[in-house]
Each structure stands twice: as C-alpha cells, then as structure tokens.
Length: 170
Image (cartoon, rainbow, N blue to C red; front, side):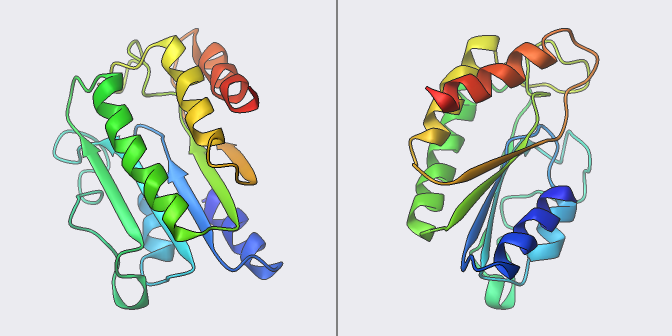
C-alpha cells in the first residue's frame, strides 16, 4: 500500500484533497479499503472485472464508498479482451471525476500489466497506448506522483513504463 502511505503523507503535509488513479490491471483492494469511508481521497481504479480476475471479491462498480466516503470510490471493472478504446473511455470518465474533485495532487498506481502480451492479464493495450494515456493524465495539469505497481515477465515492461512517463512529460 505504498500509494496509500503517499496519499496520507500529502494530507499530513497540507494537501486537502488527494486523488488516486489506479491503472494497474488488478484492483487496488487495499487502497480501496483504506480510504473507503473518507472524502479527502478520491480513488478511481481501472481493472480486470473481479468476476474474471484477482482479487475476485472487490472491485465491482457498485462499491462507491460508505459514510463520508460515499461517492469517492469509483471502480471500472473491465471485461476480458478490453481494447484501448474501451479502456480509454473508462480513463476519460476517471480523469473527468478527478478534475471535478479539485484535487491538490494526483497519485498514479502505475501498472503496465494491462499490456496485450502480459501473461496474467487479459487487456489488449499496445505499446503506443501508454504514451497516449500518459499525455492524457498530464492534461489535468496536476502535481503528479507515479508509483510503480505491476507488469509480469514481458520484455516490454520497461518500454511501456517509459512511454507513460514520456507521454506525461510531453
């Protein structure tokens, strides 16, 4: 839960609102649990549908937070075979919600295990897609911290990670 520690550190040091965008293939169940009842952290996760992907028990679209956190938890469970255009539509919605949240800082749980050749996921993102979504994250104009999460046994891990950062920097 490195991203949760970072979020709390920002809050402890003056940030009023922190947004976490989790683009790793697997749902950020620990992060969701930590902030589920809080309104100072917006958590948005694009991930494999838990009907078909680990952790299976969390990450459904109807998990929206509770108490003070109601509406501050947004899950985008996506089906096997999800293409970049489908994934991108979820990203557009997440970025719009982050923008409307008026966050002080954006934290990215960066996983490149969404890659089409990753052995343990079922999304179909291609190498150039990572550059594109890095640019789209940067378009928010927010102070942003990337925390590396996942990618498994494929040669393109480094290339895809660099592409996100390169897109963000452009």
